[in-house]
Amino acid sequence: MGLELRQQLKLSQQLVMTPQLQQAIKLLQLSRLELLESVQQELLENPFLDEKEGDEDARAEETPREEATAEKQAQDELMRDADWENYIGEFSSTSKQSQSREAEIPEEGLSFEARLASKPSLDGHINWQMRLSNFTEEELAIGEIILGNLDDRGYLQADVNDILSQVDATPEAVESVLHRIQRLDPVGVAARSPRECLLVQLEVFGYDDPILYSIVDEHLEDLEKRRYKPLARKFKIDMDELKAYLDIIQKLDPMPGTSYSSTEPHYVSPDVFVYKYGDDFVIVLNEDGLPRLTLNSFYMDDIKSCNSKDKEYFQEKMRSAAWLLKSLYQRQRTLYKVMESIVRFQRSFFEEGVSRLKPLILKDVAEDISMHESTVSRITTNKYVSTPHGIFELKFFFNSALDLGDGTQVGSESVKALIKQFIGDEDPKRPLSDEVIGDMLKEKLDVNIARRTVAKYRSAMNIPSSSKRKQIL
Image (cartoon, rainbow, N blue to C red; front, top):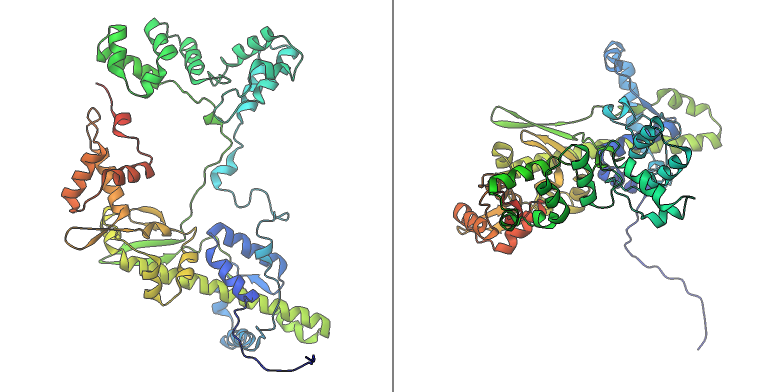
């Protein structure tokens, strides 16, 4: 059989992720803070992007209408004539999203509360106390080794032998330094167990009752499992006296290092506000702090006088800037349409609260606004809305359905809200079991929910079981 070369035509369809499409998709799923960082990075890299000043709108009213019209026509012409298919410029914010912004002030992007003062660390706070006390140089060296082995709760994660392997000292010297550190502020720090931590606090705070010491020393497991009656019989006390001891123990801090934790609180800035106005709801996008971008007319006027090499670079940056403006507008428009659809589907929630939340899936919203489910999924990721009932993530409004006896459905989040309400109104001495809560849900909603389903929802809300919620007199 002979070999030969042939030419033939073949038609095929192929999906190509252009840089413009990648940029638009990336902008959809960015959170508010990430979007601000992305826009700021583009402002630094693209000379054709400019940020409008706060009073620019007022000055724009004073400019001749012909000049404003000419600038708008120039932008429209750029959007129409740009060769998008051949544009292969790099969307820099995508590849450099995780890089540090060296040109910025370190404080930029932090919350106002985080700028006031640096939070003291646990080891720094204790080290400061040690140096103000009469610790010798050898004791300070041992203390630094101890501080280096503390976890976030303030517990010592090393034994005496581990400490001796890092410093030249005797076991007695290590125990002596450890004993003194445990009595610094916060009291009980560097303890090796919750029992030791609580016993140190009882000593420092002046409690000398032998029954109280015995409860903490020998019966912490009984307290955890709420075995109160055997404790009362053992120490020959009534339940009121036992409750008095428990009140003292509850005032102690079993994790003294958490108040000096290095984790900072995260403050949520809503992307959308929903206000009730009369009998309707008004949707307002939160654009505070987001730069208002425009094309830089100075460079657009000078592009004609550039040589071919510079002109090619300028045209690429012009297309990048114009597409970014278009993608930002499309992002805000999509966010508004999705929020508008959610308000239509979940109107009862905005009227009455979480207990009236209806079942909803991404497909329902996608069909309502004629978009793909993936677009709705991306635009609802890491986005928050401020409602008359609090701030919620957009994903919160999408929940599974439970069938009611009359053929209708109720959202799982509404069931969770009712479970939380039932537990909040229960008698602490006789907490409701999961089976009883299931019966109450059946009576109120006419829905059959198994006990294990109630337990699953309760665990998802970090609510302990009835045995652990029980309180004595």
